[in-house]
Length: 112
Image: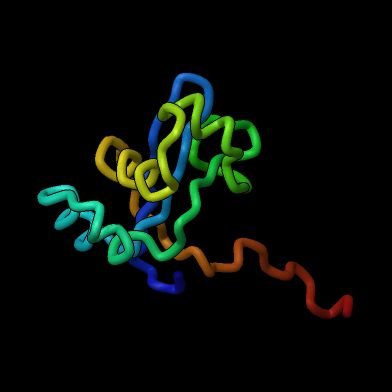
């Protein structure tokens, strides 16, 4: 996921906000215009659902959402693909600057 065009898709749940990363906004827009489960692999690079540590919002450290978090928000007895499909269809999306970008920089290299 080194593409600077990555997109975060956010599903605002009752208790937990679920997040999926899509390849880019063009692919996501094409998918939203004509959603097909068979096209899922072209839209998401990783078949995982994430949430923040607090379970709310879209900023901060991400971790994989637990099965119970996903089931509580989207229902039980669905496959991972069906959960992803539902989040992509119903979620709001937000452009991501650069997932690989280092957020920290050295303030005084002469110390080392």
